[in-house]
Length: 208
Image (cartoon, rainbow, N blue to C red; front, top):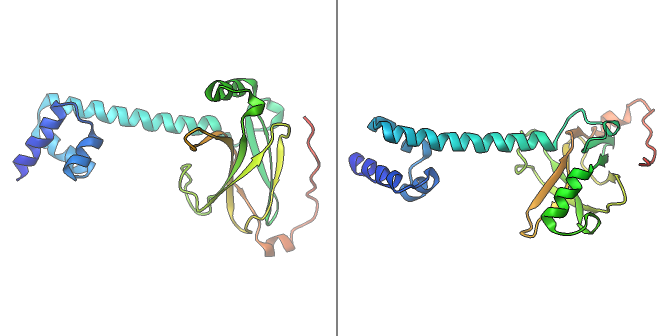
């Protein structure tokens, strides 16, 4: 049985199957497939494994680089770089402000084949309390349509004592959300904490 499965795996590799295809066809996990192939000890097959693993690693690195490009923790408007920053106003409200440079506007226009001011834009609010956020695993999300003639927004009706991240982006034709900017993680204070907090935080309108 073991030899039969190994033979089948090797045949699929020779035919150009990818790991994901072999996992689907055999029902084996990625680790079990890799173990069987390495145990076989064929240098040609080992090279094929390394090439496939390099592709997976490259894809993961690209995804991580994309996250770094859309999110910068210490961004400020004065730097004149694209970015979004969020701060808790009170236990149920977050204030967010952002700046989009010309290069990102041009990219969006080319992607959607329409003028920047005609592209619907949204703030996407993620509840990321007690999780390592990867862009898809939020406890829940909420989308708020905003217009191009503002660069700041109050986000209301949030939960006290929770952690939030805000994305600024678009809906693709396939309805997938495309993130253009990602904010810092901001915590809303607990009601008890807010009650005894020192006064002094004030908000004013921002004019570009």
